[in-house]
Length: 341
Image (cartoon, rainbow, N blue to C red; front, side):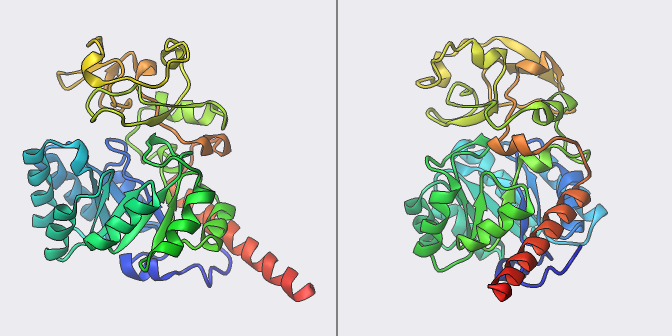
């Protein structure tokens, strides 16, 4: 893999991983096979368990542990989950003694406090400098700073290049870059901007281990960086004004340029698929999973602008190995250039 010296950051020690590469939660897509493969390959895996029943969460946690002894996290979103269900989700994680919890969206200090009291590492994914400061004040051990180029739900409004150094300067805890990171070059860039690691979603979605349906994976492979749409139209299941980034499709074309101003209550309920008897509606936040059927190309095809760099489906271990090898080569090249100069 090359000399990765200098790439083992304090974040790695905090999380117990070999490499500073975090796999995003990606609700539904990130099940036990993906999380375990990431952690076993030296990164930090994460289960995406947003609005899932505690029984499923317990089963998926056990599934990771059957595949690897390495640490991993669980992604929950308190702001997008009914309070009672969130408390049940959190209890399932704490009962299983998960190593880390990764929260997202609005900072909820009570969630951080409860997780920390149980001995969990807590990472908070945010989209602004102020939210990062709030997360640190709430007791988070690290912050994931998400730029607007990210896929899925997007809390950021500026690019990672702009946001990341500002967050890194403002905080005294490790910062992770999210949005546009899928290569060794981007890892080196994140470190140069003050981060201690990168948080990758789209790159891990396009792997055999992800629970995304092949329709979704193939859409990522086919997409260019200009083929994504930033919109709040996929609003069912989430609070109002919750932007997402998806791959452009006939569904986004049907908006005829009206990408903003959509609210869950104003959207008709057109059934376009199902999962174990549960109806899935057009403009819901459901992305196509292996457990779903229906008009899958009309689902939310979440992906970041970095999709333009991804042209093949390859195993997690190869994704991580390539990132680390390229990063080591780039660092070596920069050091040699410095000597030569």
